[in-house]
Length: 381
Image (cartoon, rainbow, N blue to C red):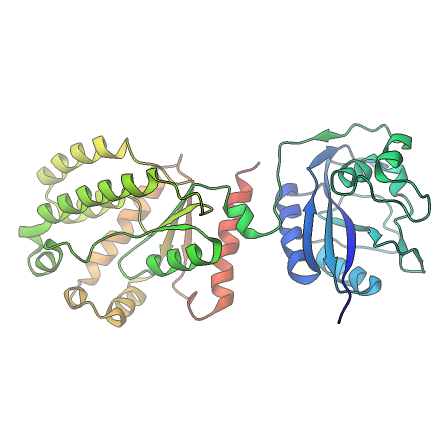
């Protein structure tokens, strides 16, 4: 049986999107190094020993099966992946990501490549303060003093500010900071499939649009001019009622909500299908309802080209959809993009999935999750 060791790491960044870098580094450590146990508060401090932008610093604890030198090599690889370039004469300088091993259990290691405990930790306020959050009573195996005593004796009086930022052990924790993600797209784009996958993987309440029981939909595809208005009005009434019911009743056992539609789609489709007089009347009713509904923190639009949409529609085999006009799909796409452009205050994210298969290719699903992750983290700045 492989013995796991508890390790303490110090992470810092003063280039680029510092908070996003630290969060993504934690996710990478969780994936490649070991199980993250605790994360300190996030502290900001001026660059020490050189001129540069302020750092964000944290400490984390984790369990790893790696040996000390294996751990070092993995951490160096992670630094490199985040743009860190080390040199033999590097010294103190700005960096996208800096990871130092503070403790490796109670081991004392002194080799040419690695010294543990970290030889300068007792002199660095920006290491000891975060370390005190996750290991206040851990004893330094050489000095025989715990973190709190080392912090009291530390002569480093450089300014250190505890920030309001919070970092998470995994993506599920990050996503749980949201209330609602709305995933939108054209007919056949895959929004229901993606919403279902995210709900299952991240313990989210799934809100799916009800459409199969709408009696006007098959008739609409046969005679659009006659059935467009009753279809759009029935969709609007149903979406409004469902959305209000589902989003107002938060499930305490779920982390957040993910929906495969946003009620604004009613106006997008109505503008394509209705005559101008019908649309003006429809919009008055819509505006009244739209003021009342919950708005998503992220509005994700899955863009697919018309050729892929038609292939997906054919594959899922709904009889009443088989004769959809390609021009109709193109108008819907344009309607969504116009809506996104005209709502700059909304946090919209467009992902072109025309060449992706997130159902059968895990790397494509990971690409979408990474984009969502980036969007959440960018809002912290």
